[in-house]
Image (cartoon, rainbow, N blue to C red):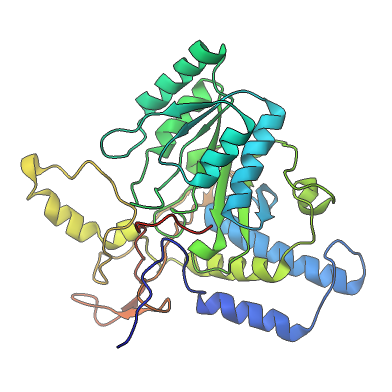
Length: 358
């Protein structure tokens, strides 16, 4: 009996584009430290920076804002450590956050819990209440608020933009764990404006062992991993060039306009179902991973936008994320109903009832 891999909440198969890019680099036989100035070093540096620009382009930020790490767990720990070194105050965190977020926070600071509603969703009012409780319990507001973009187990999408805006107005830094969201819903860091955002390559068709911490322009934090000047002195250790190349190739593919997010793929079904629900209103829980339909509406245009704290300047194109259908290898499916047989890629849902890998 044939088996099909469905556990994309834990990790995704390596995209063909990422595999090809990594194989092509391996075939060059070039081995060097990208920090060296000899010819081989400069060639490796060029490949590394190209990959960085590909990842940055997918998220709508500048390349220098992308710090490569070993994955989502390290990115989270680097964010928590860096903020604690800058401002050693309490941290606000909800119980639905990934264990990497919860444990890293508890190791460095008192944790002020953020309540979630009956749907497991973090609401801005609950964050505001946590900020007030921090002031009561610790004599100050939390130094950092965590708000995951999408839950790694049930796929609930949180109102991160509203939470980030609330914290910015109150002078509190924010970290967004976007590991489970990237590749499934639109992750627009230009509009978001969070101080720190964690992502991981293996959740969107890149290789395991590589991720990134996206840092707001102008924000300087002490590095979590020390012992070298790599990544502009923000993360020590010889760079994982092969992993970065695979990450960049997956990002470049996902930036294509014919790759749709899960939300876009299910838009027709969601619109049709809304009218059948009580009062014509959609279900209040937004999910990052409902079943994807290959016959969804064509992708809508998203133009450029103004710069935000994480942005890269006016007019830069904000590229959404999308991941292909989750059965077996990432692949295209024939178009259906009204698309004239054109081939379309369909986003994979987020969700799964296990604690996901990082």
